[in-house]
Length: 157
Image (cartoon, rainbow, N blue to C red; front, top):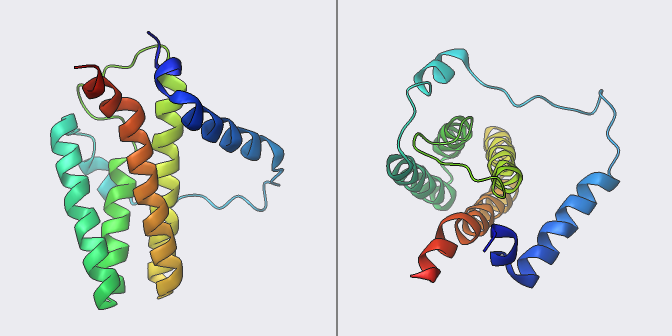
C-alpha cells in the first residue's frame, strides 16, 4: 500500500488545500526573506544525527521553547527555534526515502524549517503572541509529519 493511501481522506484534503494555497500565492523576489543560517552552526550539523537522536534533540528544544514562552525568556525561545531550524536542514542519518514519501516529507521538512524561522524571528522581536502562534504551528507540523511518516508504520503492526 502506498503512503498516499495511508494519509487518509482528511489528511489528503488538508495536504491538497496547503498545496493549492501555496500555488495560489504570488510572491515577488523583493518579498522573499531568506532564512538566516549561521555558517558555524551549519558546519556542526554536517555530522548528522540518527532519526532517534534527532527526535530526542527536537523534543528537548521544544521543551525549552515552551518553558521560554511561559517565562518570557525570548532569548531561550530564539536559541531553541534556531536549533530546530538548523536540525531541519537535512534529513536525519538513516532516513530511507521511498518514492511516495519524497515530496511529502520534503514539504513537512521545509515547513518545519519555515515555522522555526518565524518562531525565532518573533522571539527576537520579543513578540509573545506571535512566538506562541508559531510554536503551535511548529507543533502541528510535527504531529502531521509523524502521523504521515512514522505513526502510519506503527498502526500497521
